[in-house]
Length: 132
Length: 497
Image 1 (tube, rainbow over the protein chains, first blue to last red):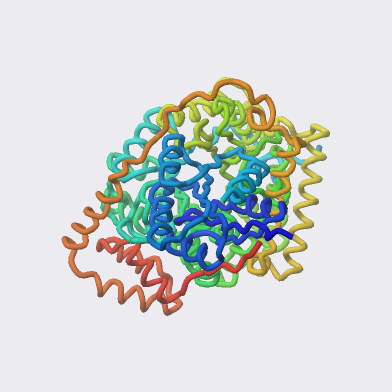
Image 2 (cartoon, rainbow over the protein chains, first blue to last red):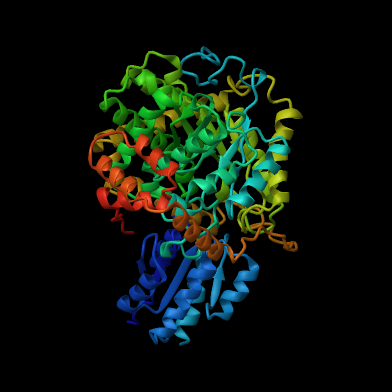
């Protein structure tokens, strides 16, 4: 049997809106993936440490408080600094269009805004993790 | 129909005449960036007929970090205004006399500090505390469940809450000391019945805490208010408010032995449901908000916030914030629904929905009592799990199209307009850091105030006078919280999915 895809769902910064992160985490688990959820309030350093320790295939970052540009950018910098390779990074939350473009330039593969379905995230992960 | 408006158990409203006597307060939640920008937005809203202020703080302020703390990275001024010192608070209310406006503050873990700052500003404006009015949310229990801005463990947090209740009963009689909220639990995904039950269960825990401090229930209960969501299911929401009023009145009379009817009246603020707004076809959100606001009014709300159409995308722009205010002004002044208290009372459908929600909420309350009360139910993860399970069920129903959301899973055609959204100055964080460096240098050493605070925190004294003294002397929110963190410790959640 193939090893299931392992995903870290991480809440960045001080933001406490975790409905989206929780629903995605449960949804991915129900789709047969292995999911680690960080809970709220994590610094970029803590997120990257968890991703390394848990040896996940993908990292899903969530923020609804507007801190995404600083925090997600820092996560990407730290991944580079720690020479972590092969981890797919995606994001979700209240993220304006202009910022989506900037985040993709930083190497975040996709941004799932409000109204995104779990099915679309599952499909995205299956396609992009397996392709690596 | 035997129940009457203005009469126990207040199912049909807390006043006999309702909006014929006084309209609800139009109170739009606002605040962003620094104190200067927020002051500008407040004056704009007041100039356009808003009748009360509702203050949004950024997350560092809510979680007790100054703007220059490393934990504040990326969050300064984002979801609300950044307040670290008395100078910030004075700037927010520049040109706004505190005896002429009532202010509601969405603040919980740091409520005592922000209230202290408000009272210090009143002093500086020459307004006696007996003339100020407003609300602090001061509702920590739902933060452990849904909103997430807790700092300290439950017991010291409840002590801080009771300190505020006790202090205001003596010193600031016009202040609403707790606004017990169901709003955030509903946003997190719970049902209407759960919203009633979990909110009232939190309310019971607070009243119990104050009673255990030997406060007389009728001395403080009239100043406890509530805060509900108004979601999309129109009649269910109207019934929800009616059922909540009926239940609370009975709880206060029968469980706590309240004698004063004002202790039994469930007064509440309502906000329309942020989670019902869609990023797709954002103009549709104006219609959703109108329906939700109408349900809140027909449900007898005392104050109301209507969401702006762009809130699934960004903070409200000035234009969208004004349209949101206009929405409730149209309901208030044009629709005619204000003519009669509880106009849906007596409708078979609404009455039976009210009974049904009351019954369902009562079952949850009994279950929580069996667990040993709300603190235990929260600690064991019961409430948290109930809520995210309901959220997940909702998501599945949407994906299977058992629930239709216009523009999201049905009727998705049409072009997505490009909105002009509110932006936060990226240089703000740097500017705040500089301001605070100057402040700390100018005011000098504050160690003796922090030492007094530490001593008081370790005793059973009421902390409000000490905190007020700290903020008068320019001690910052972050510095006060650092001392309290040292004495009380920090809450670490242990929930797993």
